[in-house]
Image (tube, rainbow, N blue to C red; front, side, top):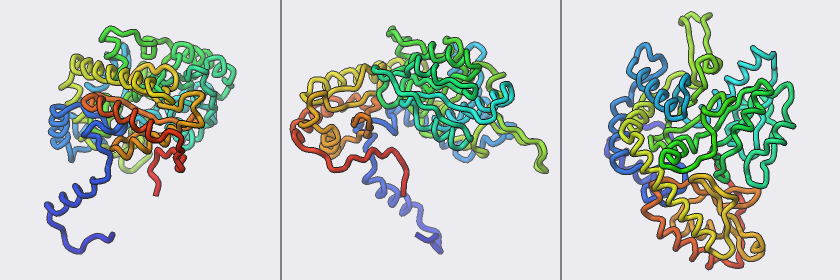
Length: 416
């Protein structure tokens, strides 16, 4: 498509954009398990108004836009308080991948300066997010992957055995994306501390669920800054924080550790340049929207949304296990889980065929492999349609019994 010679009518453009969305996932209907998380109409309204107010603002230098410095500071401080970090410091980023990448960068730089490690290793379970592999690729590090244990959690003994003099980071997940279980964070952090390495907890999915689940009276495995040896944590405001896309936080135990993620350069005709992010220019819109949503919901709002999410998740897990031929992998700790073919049913039930049948009924699930599974990230926006999902799952499983899906791909990607 070439750039038009003459400008087009705004109404026509907006109508065309609306038409483009016809085949997009139906997250507003609660029929998508991931990608977008729906906090409800009032959350939409406050986020959209705040984003519009800051649509054109740039956080490249907060000296020029001090309101964005305050927004960032207040979001980070709120997260530090939530995660029990009395001296914690951090920055906002564009999403979980950037938060992970700057945490890896900080580990690389610290261990290079303090331990003389020139090409470091990341030590991670095979359940850890692919963003860690992306970070290793971009930053010139070597990932060392350890298989998870039978419970789907990182294997502490295997992790300890894999430590070398080049280990700069040990990764833990709270919870891990594939199967929704929290790794043994205290034990992994102890392994990292003994090696002189950083320990990063990827709580991009759990950072806005686990604290509120605990505040609602449930026991949660230890994972946050109360755990000695945890160096940094990533948590996404744009996931179960219910803010629009483009808002995450990387939180460090203290400013001394945070400084390693910041790039600075003073030998430039443009003056002294310093940036804590991979981006240079940063849109103020997602930062302002995140601030507004966090302030609007507060602790009580997040506790209510979390309770709705967890109750919905548990009902769905029970419904899966009530269907002959289907099961849930492991024992999920929060709001993520994966549906697999039940052991002994491999010749009669294909979970990907079930997924295709659910897609035909308007539901969107991601796919996993090793083993083949359907993945769900549940949020409060799924609660209103859970009855329909339960009924459709049972019907879909019965319909595809004895068949097998031809397409075995498990894409989670942007490819063209």
